[in-house]
Length: 463
Ligand code: ARG
Image 1 (cartoon, helix red, strand yellow):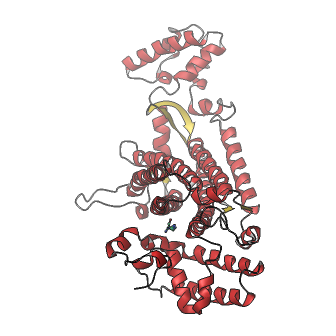
Image 2 (cartoon, helix red, strand yellow):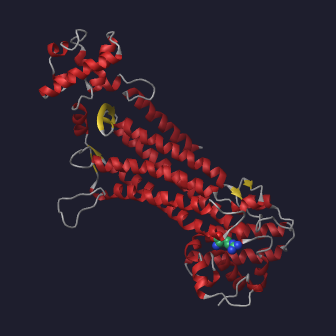
């Protein structure tokens, strides 16, 4: 069994059950590229300030490179007795580079080391998430653009309310994912701070150059309080909060895809390649992808709750509890990325059933507000117009007709202000295109929103 780097004061060997209980290697091994990059920068910095010689630094960096290649190849033995990825790499360095390896941990603690690793890992993953959100936004803009003229019922309370463009509905999700992306960018700014050099909690007596190490690792800033540097996990909580909100949006979109693909709605058809069947009912085609995305949302919320609860009563500075930050964080990162990826694949293959959507928008008095607006334009106060159209709706319901299927004479019973031109006001196109208020569903507004989105996406890729 390997000797432990911390067992100088111990007279008994660690119990096997303790090793198994305290070990994090099963999951923190994924931090190895960051741990090695951090150690290489640390060696270079130690050599620069003269704490180790240039030759020692070269030997350490070479050894770390060898270990990186072993880990990349999967040619590395893990062992619970070595607790975590940090100790595994250091122990292996002793075998690969010899005694010089004992100098690597000068002016450093696992507390600032793990904070560095998690920040570097999350910085990469946040950038990947931002890229995925960008692609998802582009996919939604494409879907909107390809269905510019499709009219559908807009809903409130899951009841048909007023007609909207399908593209307007999709661009609403574009806005949500746009904000999500902004949240991740904002969060990235606070992730991108280098904690190395805080050592255990109080800083170090060695003349280290933290800014130099930060440059080597491409961090624009270093942490300014050593205790905060090792105790802070806000950056991870913030990521998980942004991830949770993003999952809310994905889940709402998924819910609509599930509803819309039912025979009851029939608004969309998922491609066969992105649906699954039933093992007992031969006729079934199930929307498992959106269902699973909806289902996975809870895991991400769970990770946020786990981290908030983990941190809420911890005294300063580092506590071993904090080792429990990794599994929820990794799980949320993997889950969010998988959900974004699959939507990016699935959405372009959705068939939008234009006729069904149009028919649905034509039935259920979605033009009642427009009839009231017509009366208001003839001088009637809105509340009165509302009541007047309400009576007309009741009458039409009785007759089993829509408002625009009533005759002019029938309509005139409800108000003498109603003229023959009323019927123009009750068409889907008219209803859509008169909603020109800023942000409304009028065709020209939606076309502008699509163009603006395209421009924003293009500017981001060129930036
Ligand atoms: N595996 C530990 C973690 O993830 C690394 C830091 C250990 N520090 C310590 N003082 N035992 O938090």
